[in-house]
Image (tube, rainbow over the protein chains, first blue to last red):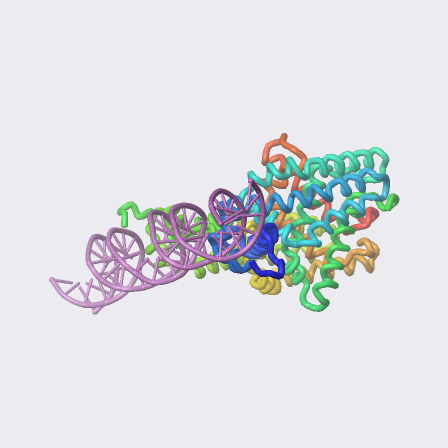
Length: 210
Length: 210
DNA sequence: AGCATTGCCTACCGGTTGGTAGACAGATAG
DNA sequence: CTATCTGTCTACCAACCGGTAGGCAATGCT
């Protein structure tokens, strides 16, 4: 242990989680070896297995860490959703912000949805159902009040928009190329997000309420 | 070789491609072994390597086969896009149909976008740029004619919609669970697609032109 | 001081991976 | 009939995988 005190037990653990997140997101669970992760942190493989007794427990920990963070921001999202008219933008923007803040979260979720769809179904029931129900109710109320298009299918709409928010961030680095080069990545991302929010909003509200 | 003539060289090759497509889509490239694929076809691993000299060549062949099929239907899509007003629905529906017809196509593309973003960028430039440019021009013309919302960012819009069409089919089996159970998978898929098309259309056109 | 715990290490394990070598059966051509 | 080619097989390889055993230095508690 160096005398500068720069390393502690929990530090190594959190660095392992961070590198595992990064590598699982970039190369996938099967495409990442414990050697890759441990070497990215600067320790040997058995030391990693001291902190996380199996590769699968490491995967679970990576997901749990991300979902714990989601649970931290969820109250803000739900508050935004119920704080009155015109706050729909805030919900979408804050939700997108959660994934823009760390796109690996989006990549991890998309990979998990492909690799273990049953697991993601369970997580959706646990973590996004509350979000979805509130937004659905908001939409139905809006339909009654004539602010929201009558032909919106609330459940499907919510599923589409969540899917769009996550996957467009997950694959942003390449879908940005659809219409050719030009612009800095930052500019493209900002336009991308603005259009995402516009699509979400404009496909929901009637222009008169906009 | 059995005397019933049920197997020929090209038959084995195409069955290998089919099983490889299915397994790569379901478990990913790294998560699928040559043993898995060869056994799914009923031959041994070295026989697979006789047809496809390396695992990576097999991956390339799988992608090429899918993109060749895309190139077959692309002319229809482009024709629909340019055949006049009101045909926007047809473009979206036919493009979605390409992925609904075989959802493994969508899963393969999403996986490739995550695993090898640079490769997908290149493919986008080659295979979807023509599609995107035509749709962008259609949008800009619509904006000049006042049929399309003025604040649509055509490039970003197209990127979002393509992304939505592909990823919502790729992960349909779990995003369908966003709002809870009920309905048969078939019914859910049909509602899902209808809402997808509605979002695409309603976020683009002004209601007066709808 | 004595002793247990923590956290890392080297060395090793059985199993699996992508890939090769080479034999062999059946069809085909001269 | 002989020679070649095609497509499959068994047997094998080195490399790597996730995981274990056990040693060892530092820390901390009594």
